[in-house]
Structures are given as C-alpha cells and as structure tokens.
Image 1: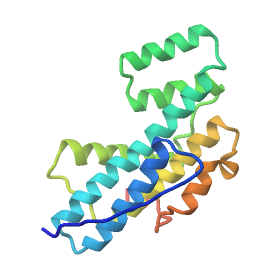
Image 2 (image 1 turned 120 degrees about the horizontal axis):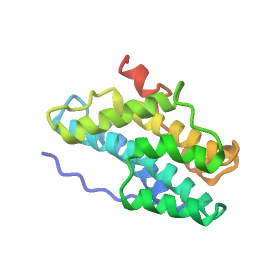
Image 3 (image 1 turned 135 degrees about the vertical axis):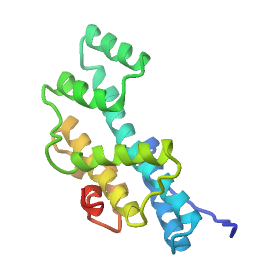
Image 4 (image 1 turned 45 degrees about the vertical axis):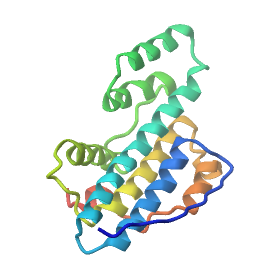
Length: 188
C-alpha cells in the first residue's frame, strides 16, 4: 500500500464541525480520485465519504435546532434535552423538531431531502455491512447531496438565508465536482 504524507492548511471566518466535515470530505474525495481504479484504498476512502457526508447533515440539523432552542419556552427546551438524552434517532428528530421549532415540517417529497434519506441508508450499509463497498460513482454525488441537504436544512431554520451565510462562502471553495443527487447517481 502506498503511504500518503500530505500537509493541508485551511482558514475561514466560520469554524465549526460542519466546516471541518466539508473541507475534510473534499480532501477525502481528492485522495480517492488519486487512488482510482477500484482499489481497496479507494473503496475505503469512499466509505469514509459516505459517513462524513451523512454526518454533515446531522451536524447542520442539530446545530440549527440548538441555535433556535433559546427562543422557546422551558418545556420545549426540556423536551429537546429529554430527546437528546434518550438518543433520539436522526430520522425521528428530522420528523419531529423542525415543526416544533418553526411550525413547518421539512419536505421529504423532493430533492435534496430524498437523496439525504438515501445517503443515510447507504451510510448505514457501508458501516454495518462491511462487504458493501460503495460504488465508485457515489462519492461526489454523496458530497453534493450533503451540501444541498445541509443548505435546505439551514434555509428551513433561517428563512432562506443560506446565500448570505458564511457556510455558502465555504462551499464555494469546497465544491462537489458533481451536481447529481445520490438517488440519481444510484438510479434509485
């Protein structure tokens, strides 16, 4: 196996877990592209891309919930902390909390949230069924899906203000090389 030694420097005006995941996932995709050719190293890197792409959505979702929690009465805060303590699943939280916080549910009937659900399914397969190696064409699509789903989540909680956010600036320097949602890439 070829040993990779690299140095990577980043700086930006917003620094949080989502920003780390965005730039780290872009770096993983670049490494996977260098490996190429269906190698075991490429498959392992793509598995990490699925995991980190999915994690981008979870981090964006829960950070937006927590940011808005102070605007709600104590019983709502207590219910949220109860859910977090009992380790509510991401899918259950997606169904419940947007409506509690904003009065509206997320729209899972269209992209990018349909592909976000597909990303969760494929992430689980990649983690829990190690024989299930991701297909080579899913990396950039998973990353694109994660960015677009994170954008939709942010816009849901911030009345469509993604374009003026620091996150939008970060995405400009860490773009996906594909504009194909995961469901389309996998022909689901």
